[in-house]
Image (cartoon, rainbow, N blue to C red; front, side, top):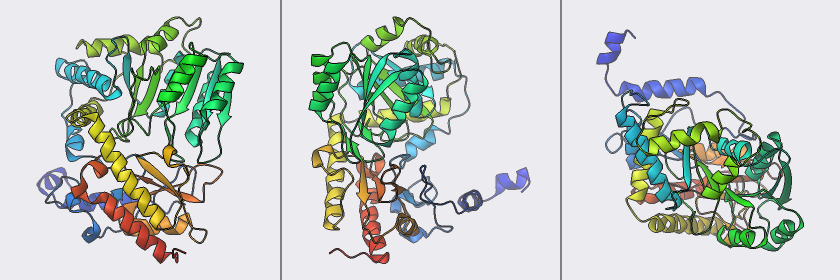
Length: 441
């Protein structure tokens, strides 16, 4: 279409064109792969979509409800923030927004200690692993990794790449290492750091942090406590100062509710001292705290600074998401996620299904990993859900990959009940299982 014609075309054409483009770019991928592709139907029945996704109530084109453990559904205001006009990343307006964003992160992580240092870098949550491995641990130093699933395994692999001597304390699928065995491991060797995946997205296992931190400070007080909070920040409580944590790494696209593309982290003054006192240079260039710390400090002080170009549009979206989060008490946000999680888990139990995380005290509140009945395959239930305009994720834990699916329930889908996302997902799961021939015994 010529540019002049395109400019005068009806806005109703846009969703249709996007749908055509999406179908062109989405061939029939296999569903059950380690990095699961959630295949969508080639046409969308808008009658099945939530009212908030119709043109009258939302700026977003009609689309299936995305209920995977990230990326999640996004609020209109957050997406609209990304349409900000192009601006200089060292201009006063953007510097002010970035500075406010970094300050708001302190409130989200619950730290008032001026020695704590936030980082927001262009990248995925995995970049947080590199920040830890490249800056806080030197080659040959010992790290204890608490293994609760696929992503704790990945953290261990990342640490090894940078030369760390990694000891993994692994639990079977659906479980986590327990305090007595952690205490035993800490008593046998001096570790530079211990890493814990707060919610392992592969299993839905929630690791408790408060008592773990108290144990580490008692048994091995010099050991840094590093938390992978990619699937927990903004839906599970994290009291950075109160629990004396040394590092929490996360990402933008999960419970924070901002599109993917930002690695977000907070490090304690103790962790920053460990970086400053290292004997060798950081083992990364882009992920080097040497290159980024003064940049973050300058931005937070509203001073222009440059090492590598940030994404102004994503920072605007993050600023909006954080402003929404902090408009109400964090305790209220955590309670709403727990309430939705309890309702979902009850519905799963009522269907006669089991969770990968079997212990109720170790079940995440922002996602649920659901064992399928033996008669139902991932390759049947996921397309069935997709036809109902609900998108779940397949399994990725290598030991049980074909046996379960994952339901993400974070952010706006939980906080805005009028959308009907959770109710629709539960109904789609019930109907989908029935269509696959499952009946509760």
